[in-house]
Length: 353
Image (tube, rainbow, N blue to C red; front, side, top):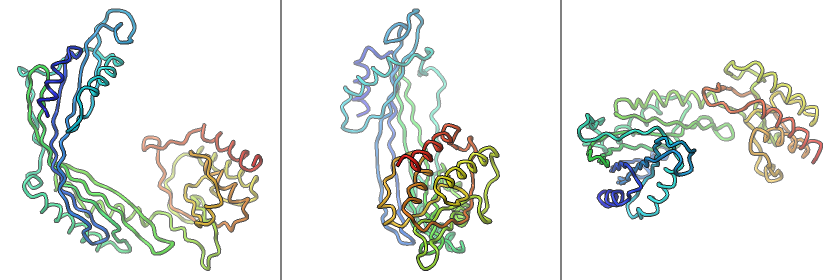
């Protein structure tokens, strides 16, 4: 198949350069449900990563005039059984829309050394390694008070690479990697809280199973512990970052002011006395959710759901939650436009419906 791809690329004069990398992966996998092994398997895959270049004048292929040399580039993944023709046509079309600075691929006369970043224990005894990780997981969870394992997946992968390009360079390399993900549970019944995590690394010694599980176990313990009040008194339970003693990270003052303002306006419209209308933690009985049609798909969901719940005359409770807020560097998305959207939703779902 590698030679088939190379021959197909050589036959296309539109490409000024190309590179193909064959990645042959052997993956040993183990799946746990609670403490029992659900399945063990070996999965072998072969993928071909292709990059094509098209050197042209800047005015060609949709660019601006000027005669400047530019480099179009496109990449795709090729699998066993695929037809190279349509993929190369699409790659040519995509490359014609890219205008990078010209550059050349490394040739056989240049220093280009294939890397070997691999753990020999994963290469030689992958089944033994994942069984060892299984034991470490069960032992670590057993030492965590109030936490139990729901499920886990373990992967020990070994990948060999063969790379060849249009200038005649041929390089081989290999690497290993491990991954395990897991779901931890704490609490019981309505108070059950779930925390999921994962860890990836190149070498087994860097997996540090116990350390990862301890960290995410603490997340589970610190998560919302909202429970439906005893004797079935509540139809809806809202979490609040500003009520009670739940731990919360100290962050943006003006976000806090904006949140309190939106909560006040929502309370004036619904005649409720919530302390945190914008909280993402909201628990509903199944039959209650069947009565509500959700229309918003961003942060407008919060004022919408509060307005619709208030009109149904439901028994609404509020409980304290812990809160580990994110900065924008951490991936926080909400901005001032979402504040105006919340105002729109407060008016729309309280006065126009």
